[in-house]
Amino acid sequence: MHLNLRGWPPYRRLRVFEFRVARRLHAFEKRTGPWRTALLVATAGMLLASIYTRPAVKTGWFGKPLAELARDPIPVGVHNDLAFRVLTPMVSYLIGLRGEGVVLTNLLFAWLLLVILYRELRRSRISSYYAALGTLTLALTVPTLTTVYYNDNTDALAHLLLAAAYFQRKRPWVLWGCFALSLYNREAALFMFPWLAYLRLRERGWGRAYVLEITGALSCALAPYLLFRKWVASRVIMTYDLDFYLDPLLRYPLEIWRQTFGYQWLGWLSVYKTMWLVPVVALIWLRRSQESAKRNSILLLLGCAYVQLFFGWDTTRYLSMAFPVMLIAWETLVPHNRFDVKHWVVPCLIASLAVPNLYTAHDIIEVMHGAIQALLT
Image (cartoon, rainbow, N blue to C red; front, side, top):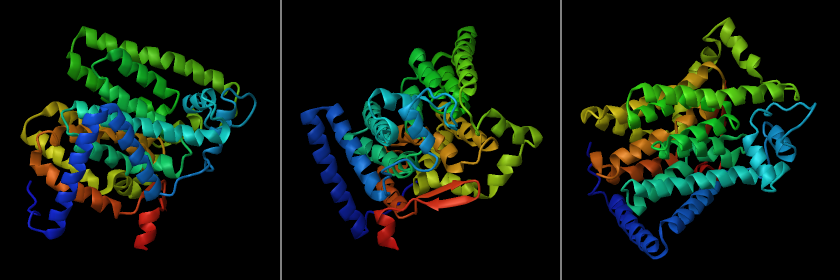
């Protein structure tokens, strides 16, 4: 894949600008170290995301139960539909950001994800400039923007734990610890188990030890979590309990999926917009180079995220759980400039900024308004 943009004057000016930024960023990291650079890039990413979309200053309608949990993580005799998702509000409570302060806790988790992402991309033999560009890609797309704009869910910590599990895939105790914790933050993490199990399969290979590790990890995570759900259900009144999601599935397995089918393409588009080109090109490269492990990892991750659509209606949120596909694609293409990615990825990111930030759930489509959209309309 080769796009001949080099003779176009705006593109030449863009490349000159990129070279200057890359040189200064490299000099800054050489002077201060990679961690301080990660802090700088992550902070810049959150500031840009707050300009790109209008940041929430308090929890939305669905976030009210989250704020109540951050005020009292172990309620009794009240109605709270998010009582099972206690990890984010519990952390918020413990660090003193109680009630509406959970808004800041979510932003903190989103910022930490960007810090870790930059650091890990640098460890993957990616230059400081393209590590920063990969970090900004996540900051300016749905996995971060929904936290900035809505801030009424626990997605930020869910994404942080999933990314930590991926980056620590060689350390089973860390990976499975992140998986177990993530259940208390968002039960949809259970859908990611097949992908995490595949990551471990790649690391240690098939055998009796692998089977014992996988079954042991799942049992040790699920047993206390199910007891926790039973304990919470005996203390709190809930609408969105297990029956709420399973009853339609038992009556007609495709009922929920059918209701969102017409909007699923928009859900996929909303996650990365034009930046989906990066994972698509990575899949093409992996297919040509016979690198089945990474290719299977991307496809399995997409499948794990998609299966959620049989159980719930929040299309954009569910599909954004597949956000690590961008990390895998970045690690595949950028270090060796495969398919000349370094020459077209920045124009691709700029193009994505011109596409409205959409959010879809059931048959609802919302636009996450921000400064750029205001200028274009």
